Image 1: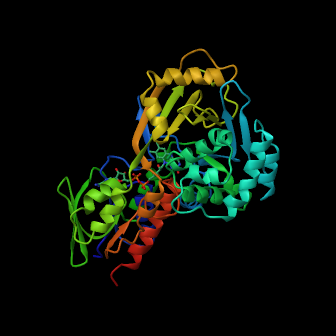
Image 2: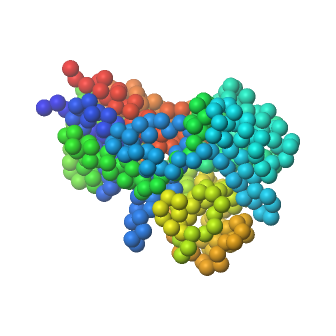
Image 3: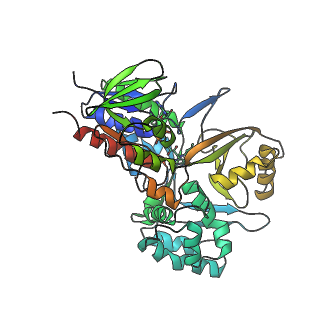
Length: 437
Ligand SMILES: Cc1cc2nc3c(=O)[nH]c(=O)nc-3n(C[C@H](O)[C@H](O)[C@H](O)COP(=O)(O)OP(=O)(O)OC[C@H]3O[C@@H](n4cnc5c(N)ncnc54)[C@H](O)[C@@H]3O)c2cc1C
């Protein structure tokens, strides 16, 4: 019997890798430490309320995710609410800032969006328009942070505060003073490249687990592969180009390996294996960054002006309205990045404060306090600093028979579902090319 490819981790990257290999007839075994699939993008049953471990949103050319979901037989336009990119930033006691793209073809969608923008003074509008060619055609230096880059592009502090900072921290889960300008510029360029509809936002209508992880597990099994839950890999060993995995429950397997865990778990598994010293030192430079999602449930749908709004100067940068997604009265408030999460830690009752904030910023908000629960993912993504960008390894780590996958590998995207899926495809291709003939 052919030796299997052992995929360690059943997150979106590992499942993509396993699917891609199983579709090509390769024997695959997925080992997952948890009792369910999905990793950092999974659904949770919270006392009968099914919701995700964190509110997710796809943006900027999420082509591989859409393709993978389609291949599993789901219609992405059913699975997601697809919206034109439109930001509506609510601020205390002032007109909100509204900026977005229109439904015209590229680049008219950007020009019209800018002309129709609201709550943005003329100098800010000019400064924004003037930096667009830079965003589309120039690459920031490898060393610079987003804040340094914005300063270099002469972006007024008011526009940074009201728009750029929220965009940066939401896209990179990293505060602008620390975030890699090069990575942020790449996200913007991917978003604003033609065709115009690349800029669309995709908000899940269904629990994330039902969109990809669960259908992927079923398909892998139907294709003859195995997915074993509660199988935590605790040791790896290389012998004459052959890899062996030892699991905590005593299981042992041999074959090529795709290591699709987060970088901190990967570093633990690789430590001590001859030839991995430099790689482990790179992984140590990937440090975690948190995201908190506060779920609020009102007895009646509150009057949110759009499915997605921003809150300026609040720890929660964005609010998602789940009523148009099918969960009546439910909102998800997202606080990304270290600074916002530190601010939440300093608050007495974040849910009460959030309710008060929404009453203050949105007209006609109900007085009744909502049911509230919060999920904090302390290791939601890696902190996307210039140093981390340099440290991200490729799928090919130089050790025959061992491939890396995960949103943290060098995909040229931030830690996102798209990055995870692309990394899984790359690792699968490498593993396929290394099959014994
Ligand atoms: C709260 C939150 C909000 C987010 N928002 C967005 C968003 O809006 N848009 C977006 O695109 N992305 C978002 N992300 C990021 C996205 O979820 C991740 O990029 C993606 O899920 C990473 O997938 P992965 O397969 O690379 O890693 P993971 O999902 O971490 O998968 C790794 C798997 O490996 C398993 N594992 C670890 N160690 C072992 C071991 N020793 N043995 C066996 N198994 C092991 C883990 O249990 C896990 O299932 C968000 C993440 C969080 C947490």
